[in-house]
Length: 279
Image (cartoon, rainbow, N blue to C red; front, side, top):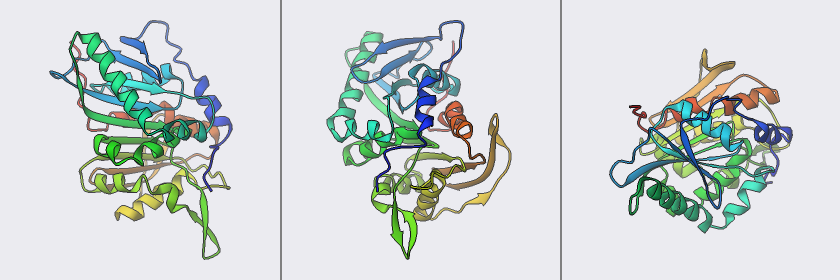
């Protein structure tokens, strides 16, 4: 089973999120063929190199503001489709789509700074909720796996079930694209942040179950934890092994799920991206 829905109401709520800001943010917005490019006014390339974040799911302006909150030195491409996880996985079954996004973002950023060309140094992929569908398809390509330096999955990794000894178990086929990256993170060669709520879909594997699957695969250990990493996000457990990180939070309602999107900037700030220097 390959789940094509993720807590049906939640993607709709995410797309409805708006910033509520009264003034224009300090960023240049450029519409791409797929997605929207945001270049912070304070950002400067390092020679002919840029760092890039590509985020999947949620209103682009909302993702933009969470990215700015992170204080990281990079440019952002926000990709948002109406629909559930299939709305993200289907387009990226075209293996060339992600390459086109990266290429166009690079060209438009170079144009913005009056450069002949730029190349991507660090590439961070983040997703919320149904956006994992795009991430999974991207990670199926060895070419992209070698480019991506960081992944952030904000309550965003689901899978189908298979039967094992008469019980539901996480479908290994659905998880296969994520395992190599998680293993690299556990060896400090990449960075991976996975957050999950306690919400239980029932008919397919929850974000907590998929996190446990990867924890077992890399040989990490989940331990009890407390505190808050963001407002109203009650930490209950964590697992860390070098660059591999899992954070488990309380909450079984849709609003609890949404808090992971609101806190996206927190986890982007913990990636390998450098802090943004504001003049």
